[in-house]
Length: 287
Image (cartoon, rainbow, N blue to C red):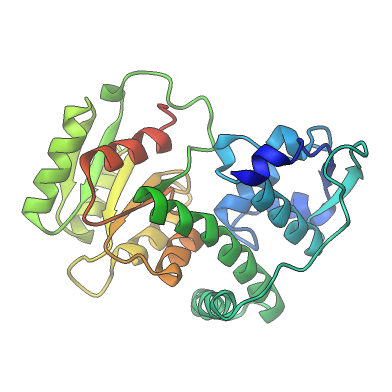
């Protein structure tokens, strides 16, 4: 917050490089979801000050760090620097490294390697850095607020009443599922329930698909909620399906895994009703 108050809006303007355009066109490659949102907002005209909006969930300092990382990876370049009274852009500055950050990067790299065994190791390492950086603000938001959620990339969504949206709750504990259904239905959303992964697949194949999935991580069988999230994101019909993870796992490595796989939100258990409602509203762009 201090950064936002003391620093004037940054007028530095960035534009996409050829590599940045390629990453935006093929998001399943090297760019994690948060960075994809940032890349999609870079047009060579708007300054970083223009991009410092709540939609990106980044403080000015975090936004600068992310832009430096994108420049380091040759995905963006400076189009024009701002006036002298704005933030003085000095080119890429290597973020301070710490043991936890390095450990998170390595954990993510190994997870990516399991998913993409033939991928170039340098690509995996750079992708892991992006995911690790993205998980930082996510972890902070969860620590401070009890949840993290990003609005849908489609800004036209969210126009309408809650009863226009179907929320699927994937939870093997019947009591926990009823609690979540009560919270969600009282806000006016339509709800449905899947007890396990098999029922989740049935709901996804139904004529009325869910607009949002509340996914418990601890599910029966060999696959957990993260595994099902990965399968959803790999399917071309469900790449934009919004998923909020519900879990007691709040370690940075677990949060980074959710970020890497493209979760729209992350709510830690036990949660209060207003936190879950807030995460849902934010994810659906309902304010």
